[in-house]
Amino acid sequence: MKSNFTNDQISDLNKIVEFFKENVCTDKNADLKTCYKQANHDSLQANGTGIWTKIDFKDQRKFYEQISQSTFNEIWMYCESTYYPSEIKSKNICAVATGKYQKYLSDLGKTNPRIAKYADRIEASGDFNGFDIQYHEILKTNSDFDLNDPNIQLILAVHCLSMNDLEKRNSHLIERKEPKFE
Image 1 (cartoon, rainbow, N blue to C red):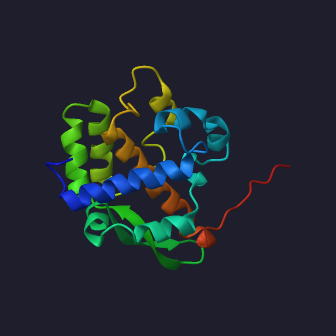
Image 2 (image 1 turned 90 degrees about the vertical axis):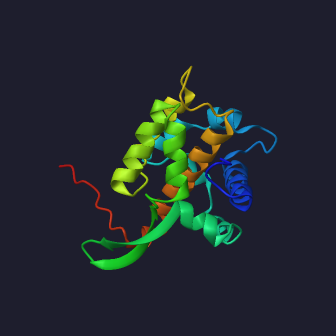
Image 3 (image 1 turned 180 degrees about the vertical axis):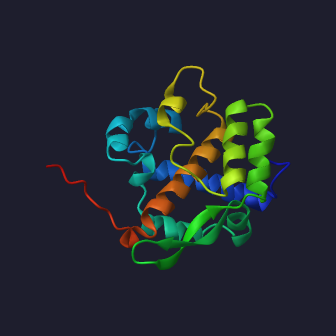
């Protein structure tokens, strides 16, 4: 982290991890690995979501104000999206494919091939995707996602905050159609 971020940015990154832990762990004394294992991921996935849905988006928006604009801008940016069929345009959160966070992911990827794959996907698309990190990958034995590693904790926190933002920021603009079975 120290080779990619300033001390102030590292402080913000630690706040991101703590905010994530506080919002997804029901037992406030549990470490991230323990509370992640305790979550009912199958139920969340059956609903088409992930552990990030435990995060209140209003609290998340307030939290963004607690980290410096400099740190935010190294991880995220806003891009315009069009919602159909209404054709309403609105801002969505996107990845900064050329920022310090992306460089950090690429550097970690030199020793962790799964993080390299994740970094490549974000760089190619400029976006975070719910399929990029699956809960079963994290929970399996000898996972490339060791939740005791502060780097992995940060990656999971940023990923989940991004997914929560993508899911909730413009949820009122998404027109959902239920399939009709006859």
